[in-house]
Amino acid sequence: MPSLRHEAFLELFRNRPALAAELLRDALGVELPAYAEARAESAELTQVVPTEYRADLVVLLWEDRPRLAIVVEVQLSPDEEKRYSWPVYLTHMRARLRCPTALLVVAPEAGVARWCGQPMETGHRGFVLRPYVAGPDSIPVITRAEQAREAVELAVLSAMAHGQGEKGAAIAEAVLPGLVGIDDERARFYFDLVMYSLNDVARTALEALMRSGTYEYQSEFARRYLAQGREEGLQQGLQQGLQQGEMNALVEVLEARGLQVDEQARQRIAACTEPEQLKRWLRKAVSVQSVQELFE
Image 1 (cartoon, rainbow, N blue to C red):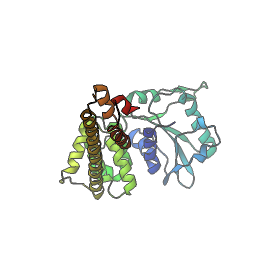
Image 2: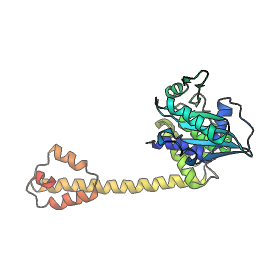
Image 3: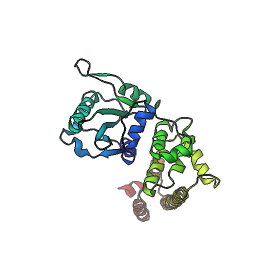
Image 4: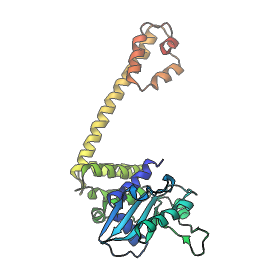
């Protein structure tokens, strides 16, 4: 089953189908046919083949007819089965759409990208598949707000590929202006993807920048996001405080009744995360004859 991270990468291409063409043309130097529109095709195109031979996504470059079909695959780890299924994707789409096809593999880890780029011999003379691979070396590092405004999905992809590196904070800072003007649901989703992709240092730096109040591109979305985070943090803190109080009260009641609360019992009480369970223990503590009886 595809992971959430796998689906997150695909969502960028679904929201901006032209991203596949831009990566091929600008990052990988592939000459593309003239086209007026890039479309993300539905899974119906591939339902005539078994599930194990179904591509992640198909982007169709269109101008009065299909000009190029781009099969987009997100690869987060090596998978030998792909050496057999990827040629099927291309030949199937070529036969169905009657147009040239290309395979674009998005592999954010360098080792996986190298594996994906290996030539795949099919056994037929001259029929060797060499995938186009968008790895960390070819996915651009976007650190300018102007770039993010023009192609926010590409900027988010940049953060997902390079967020753990030394330029993670700069990339994330560039993405924020690109979130202004898009719908809140998509902006929140992209913001979460960026924050998840950053290392701890970059994440802390970005949060401090957003809270400073002097951030040049701070948007209404960013302010609402931070306000919501503070509210959620406050509620979580209050809840944790109440639970800690009940834990302390439980131990005090047991000790006041002359019952010995050993370290194992204290750890069990401290590990409880269910408020209702703590309340039940607290009610029982006034009548049990031993700490062990409390947990029965």
